[in-house]
Amino acid sequence: MSNLVLYRKYRPQNFSEVVGQDHVTTTLLNAIKSDKISHAYLFSGPKGCGKTTVARLLAKAVNCEKDDGPEPCNKCSSCREIMENRSMDIIEIDAASHRGIDEIRELRERVRFGPSKSKYKVFILDEAHQLTSGAANALLKMLEDAPAHAIFILATTEPQKMIPTIISRCQRFDFRKIAVPEMTKRLEKIVKKEGVSVEKDVLSIIASASGGALRDGESILSQIISFVPAGSTVKKEDIKGLLGIIEREVVGDFLGFLLEDRAVEALDLMEKSFVQGVGPEAFYENIVYYLREMMLLKIISEKEGESGTKSLMDSLLTKLTEEEVGRIKEQTKNLTTEEISEIIEFFFEAGKRINYSPIPQLPLEVAVAETTEMLRKNSK
Image (cartoon, rainbow, N blue to C red; front, side):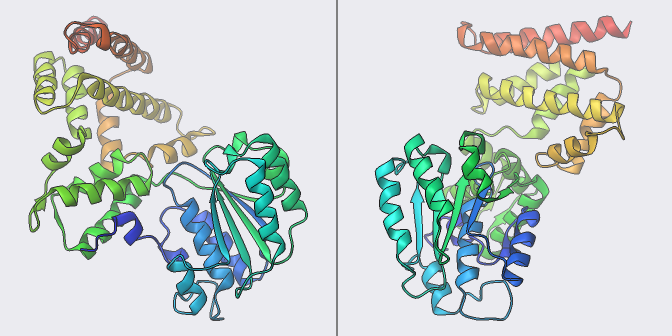
């Protein structure tokens, strides 16, 4: 294996390799094909979803020396220089550490001069929302008077913090979190290329734990592969032991026991998780996330067909597999939304007390007792 971490080693080199952002890549490819390139773009969205990667692909595509389609060829001197971070005409700036007006004034001087050998000089400004007020206004002036050879790509995780006049000067693209099934397929391709054997469900667990950020998912996979001896199979136990990840299946089993009035088995499962190194806080957080998904899926099933239910379901599918959705629906078919809300409140109260309890798991055990008692009363 290469010494490069996986997210760098397998960074997409064509738009077709980008995962989960078809609405962005299709529009950009059409713009390149029709030669309708904007002078300024705003890429917004959560961390690790491909904003900087797509910015580099765009820089590569508009400067590609071959004329055989909108995708970069990755063979010409321009493409090779950009891929190897040697191009003098692609300037990347981290606004988190270069956020003042002096840095933007220096940038303005660089904008004035044309590219050294490429068609366009591309400026990629990461975390653009962190610019100071004076720097943001200086950037606005540059966007208004940008020369024909300059393209600005602003990337941000918090577009609401940017001044509206900058946003209005840019073509805006909103990136999405990567859905669990899409990320799992991507991780499958990586382990196949790396020649790594993984146990069933390992990759979907990693995808769920990454929170929709492909970069995080690839980093977790890289860490696990480094931890497991060469030639061994990566097992679910490796993930739990190394990263403290609780399998969703375990959380689902725990809540399943609760809903079936099997409190002893629920408590036993929770205790086994603690013995394996999972802390009460981590266990609590996973319960609350799972209960939220229960509540939302219950609401969707009751209001199916109404406005907004499809987009809400699509959002949930970025975190859940279809099998997990099916299981949760089965678990909640005999519950009301009020009962789910009450269970959430029990565990909310437990979460507040964990850090102050002489026995950290005791508040969770109390929540188990309260839940089973409430469900028994309601069933009479």
